[in-house]
Length: 88
Image (tube, rainbow, N blue to C red):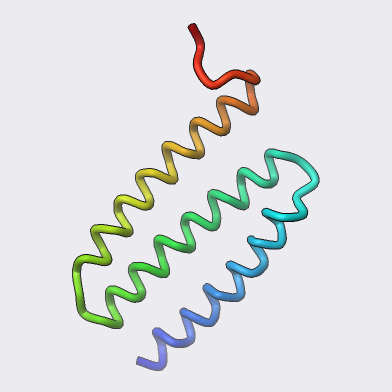
């Protein structure tokens, strides 16, 4: 159990650093990368909590969060690249 606590503290530290980059990023691309990193950290945190609590429902939520994060990153990247949401 102490290993999970060490990982949780490490992830909390990384989340604070990512949140700083998300708030103070000099460009929109930096903020997008920080947001994607936050999504990855949330997914890993949910997986750690699933291991800690012994419940599998948190793994399902982590998978859904990861899938939505990929879609979000693709949409924001496309918007930043072309300035539009969808091509018509």
